[in-house]
Length: 235
Image 1 (cartoon, one colour):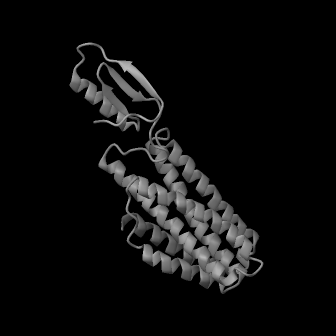
Image 2 (cartoon, one colour; image 1 turned 180 degrees about the vertical axis):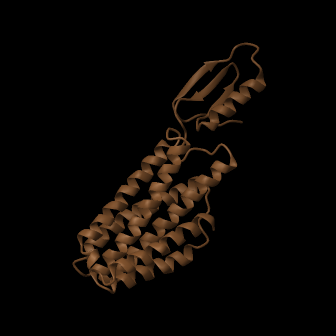
Image 3 (cartoon, one colour; image 1 turned 180 degrees about the horizontal axis):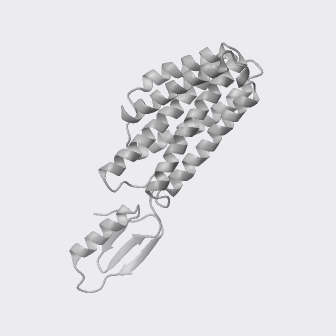
């Protein structure tokens, strides 16, 4: 038994003598586009709008795997970023740099909340490395903050640049696949990418490049970020 449709609906009268199997195939194809269809006697009841909000339903296992990897790694990245800012706040929270870090952290909390919801809605399991990112993220944030404001901001620049590049890669992939189908997901990723770049620019504006061994520190952190992205997609 199909559930009654909750979104705006279209009623289409079925031609007398129409093949039931053809109608079922039509309903299946319609639902693959993210809409709902119900066959009710002489009428087809069709939703006029898609029933999902951001992530479209996958049409095959390959697409499902792609979307699962994207959500899993983005969730892990936002979780790691939250732990980094938590570590920085533990060291610098009561200094004049505290409000700057707190503002960026609040945005990361909002990002993580969205991905928590998307993971649950789409039944995607998180990476098994979450306990590692919990400890490593906090340690990186606190360790960089022990170098002072400049160290914390250098860490922010390195991490946010890596995350922005990763989001750009996902945007390119979705654009190549089907920009119309993934419109809402693209809008979300672009919004988060832009906010990550704001954090990157904030770090530069607050003396990130004055941190001790800035170039070395940035490169080491970014190598770690790339490794974390690679593992979180797959494990």
